Image (tube, one colour):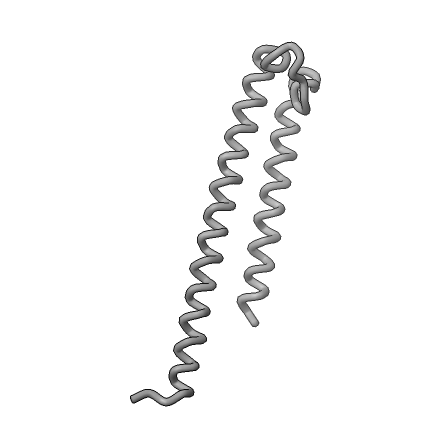
Length: 99
């Protein structure tokens, strides 16, 4: 038969496992969303740079208003921002994991 202290210890361990599993699921969903966003932005910039404008004449936004080859710089900026955000999240998780 287990003592109360052992039960409490196991309960805390199980709660910790469940919390880690939930964090992994959230991180995986965020990573998939970032990858999908990067692919959509790449396709959008590539599509708009070939046609020289937006998809419809009245539909102008962001990278469709840039000059010539500026789409690559915009894509690089978006990817750098995403990389910075991911690195920040990983550093915060690493710092909190050391406690």
